[in-house]
Amino acid sequence: VQLVESGGGLVQAGGSLRLSCAASGIIFSTMGWYRQAPGKQRELVATITNGGSTNYADSVKGRFTISRDNAKNTVHLQMDSLKPEDTAVYFCNAKGSYNGITYWGKGTLITVSS
Image (cartoon, rainbow, N blue to C red; front, side, top):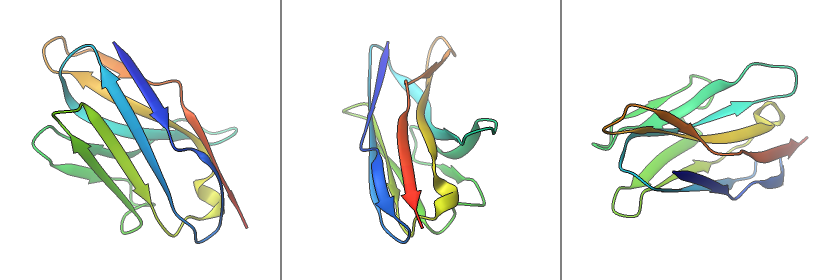
């Protein structure tokens, strides 16, 4: 099982970035994104079920959009109106449909400059 994130980088406040995660190996149910800022605990950003139901952290509602392509086992995070407080390492997360195990990507750094 492998989850590979892409799309991280440096952006100015107010800008946009799109993260992608390519998952392989098994079929996944819920997929999502978490983030961890320096000195803070990892926190949920957004999740999406294989049926398309979404859940967002209050801090990103209205600015971030999660989507997935079940056929390609990919999940995306469109991030708009980025703020310096969005600076963190973003991790892809996916739960195996049959084994119930949660898998993590290695993370990709997003830095939002003010």
